[in-house]
Length: 183
Image 1 (cartoon, rainbow, N blue to C red):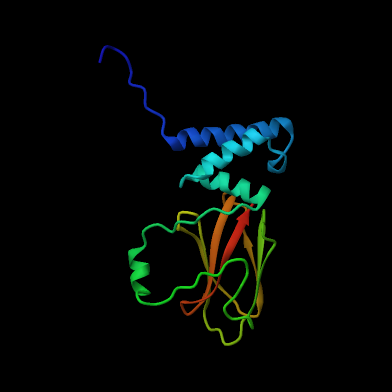
Image 2 (spheres, rainbow, N blue to C red):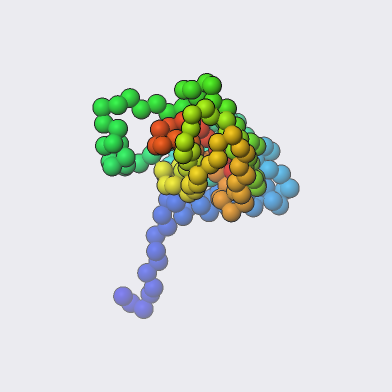
């Protein structure tokens, strides 16, 4: 080295993160939100949303809020989880459809910015569990739920974005759906 410091090369995530933050700052300066984004901003977010990073997740969330666009969800490598279900048909239920229509399950408001209400009335349930996963498949929240009751969940400390939740009874899937956190 000739007295010069090496310059670290920026990663794609660094560039995407900076671009998303620039767009968000522009919205603050212009006193607008994601509904009023420019065509150029939407195009930039769409490019960023094609990745599998935190910035891509943020861009996907803004595009979902504005246009109801959905993006493929990659759970990642979960060999131990999948091994438990080898040879079985696995059903993933989205958009509030339930494989057991007699169940009453409501999560509201969705999208939410501060509190999520979980209302349950499911016949013959024993141990209801509520789990929330981020777009990387990492569990971010888990708790036991009381049947025939409403539970209030504080989401104020959760980052803005799209999440996936599961409600299970004795490890049997009751419902799986999306949850959107906004500010």
